[in-house]
Length: 277
Image (tube, rainbow, N blue to C red; front, side, top):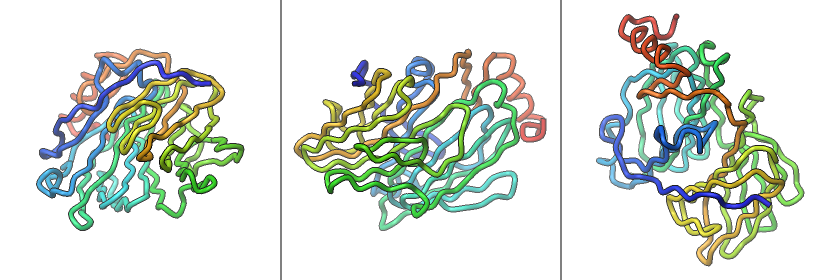
């Protein structure tokens, strides 16, 4: 059984063009979240909280995962890619050696609710060409467990109460697991995945395993993660991945292994070489 080791509260902040978000991340948490770097949640029915979006900006050295629950997020990048992440859909982007893109929200009856997760890349993959995959809601693996839980498996191989399923994402060096789980009131659900990798549980609605809304629980390695919802039920994300045993140096939109590589990223961006070097 996996044990709860640590609880982290999401912090209210702003990013992009004044977008209100709740964030779990920062240098202090890099090794605790490893291989993940950051989890942001946007959830508002006030358009002034998010309408400025995230105008054109660069990334290098990691992957971003955008998952929408309500509303839409339009992506454009330097490779002339453009697409819209719809409710229930995912965009998995590999920044690699460099991407310059924008992410602009498109509301649905005023409500916008979604997540962006940063996932680190090992050193030998940081300078690969940029790429991305869109997974509409219909391609996400869904499991309904005896009407007590709904599980959306985005990445990884997971045993959901005895039923083995896999998400649509192709294999990655970090072996990521990503699920969205909705539990009925007082429901219990047993999940088995990546025994030798720690697990992260972020509650975005209700109460589960003594974790309140906008709290993240860090769980030990182990064979089973048992989720237990409170009397109001719970909605949560479950994440796991292979820990990258390398230095993490992050400065703004760049995540590399050394300060020299970070300086080079800024220099490449300034000279217009970020995406081609």
